[in-house]
View 1 (cartoon, rainbow, N blue to C red):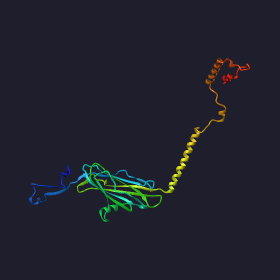
View 2: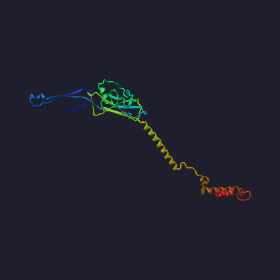
View 3: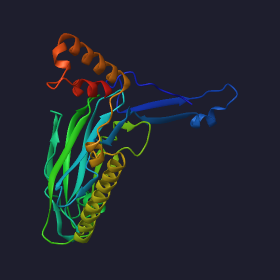
View 4: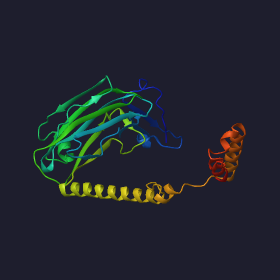
Length: 294
């Protein structure tokens, strides 16, 4: 068993040929014709290319929201840079009269080109579209990344959802798919996995009018219940109570400290104005006594 390490991608050929021979002094010359063997190994550079969801729309409530977005991100987590092709299958006309006006994507990579491809019926691209199209009509968009480095490439597909039919209570699944490919004669995916294919699904819902009315009615009812509960709590706390008539006719008596202060003030007034302590008919004044008594 022999193992080889690839030092640089330019130091090897496309195929490595290994010659092996064996000799023995105890072997006769007439049996040495099978003592040599030749084998060849295809040299491929290991790459690790993956496609991920870059933050797509997962739920759309039509017609409140008609904007739909699917985002794919292609990343190279391996050591070697590699040219990559990626094909997208997008539904254009779906069931129940819905359509998606999706077009060429917005790309953050400068060395990437895309085209909306129309292929013959029996071509490989047409078969790919037919096998992965979940709608009545799909478009195939093929993009080419000249050299995928450690810088990821983001494909952003956007478009509006429309419908030529009126209805309610409808539910539609919108699924797009992406397929990565590269030159398998020179590169090999390592470690091997299923990261070269990804599908993104968006749930499109057209709620029924009866459900909308029910939700609105329940919102109003629960709002009234909440207001009633708040009113009862405030009433129990005395927020809406006012002073009674008895309290207004019989104000509260002053405290002992206030009575002493009133008495001292009355004595000082009589001392400063002795003539006012007697009434005009010679009787003592009742005003100061009443103040003292209070």
